[in-house]
Image 1 (tube, rainbow, N blue to C red):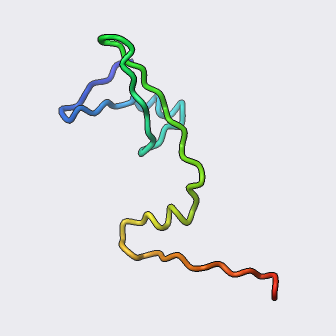
Image 2 (cartoon, rainbow, N blue to C red):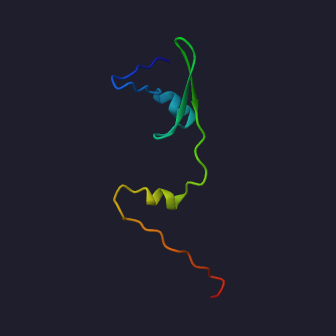
Image 3 (cartoon, rainbow, N blue to C red):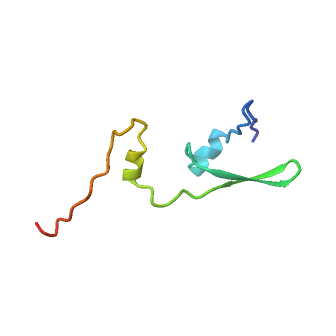
Length: 76
């Protein structure tokens, strides 16, 4: 499979490979130069612990979501 480097130095992973491996936008990869002209592209694991709260807090609209202290229902 062929791909090209863009004028910005970006490498596009072909859609067929992204689909086969479930690669999504924003995922991180490591590039290693094995020898002159040969490179190894390695997918990095997704960080654990990123949940819905972190996702909501990453909303681009500033202060749209705010953290609230959770309360226990043990005393009800």
